[in-house]
Image 1 (cartoon, one colour):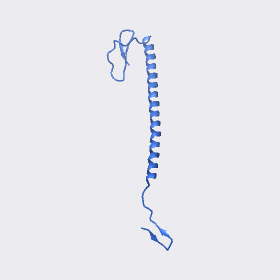
Image 2 (cartoon, rainbow, N blue to C red):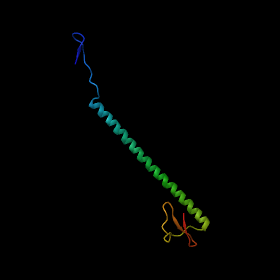
Image 3 (cartoon, one colour):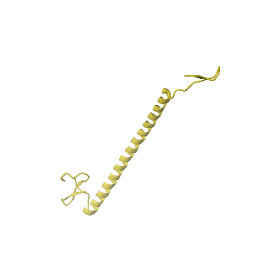
Image 4 (spheres, rainbow, N blue to C red):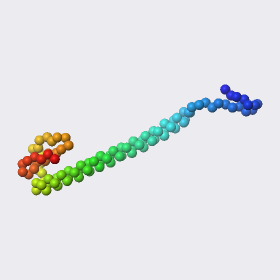
Length: 101
């Protein structure tokens, strides 16, 4: 409802709220930020998995070196070992005993 201040001046109340273009722009910006963060998160996860595998490999090598030093040789095949518990491994020693590491 316009108000008149004189013959040629009219003041109109601006409707409150956002236009569709403004809302669409916000949605596009949020979508771009979500895509960038998803890509970064995936990359971080892959690097963490690789780091974990490297650490496990180093730990296995240290265990094998310790076993070699104690038993004067690397362990034989592990076909005769019982099923190890979760998080452990079974190593057949040269003296006929099985070792759970």
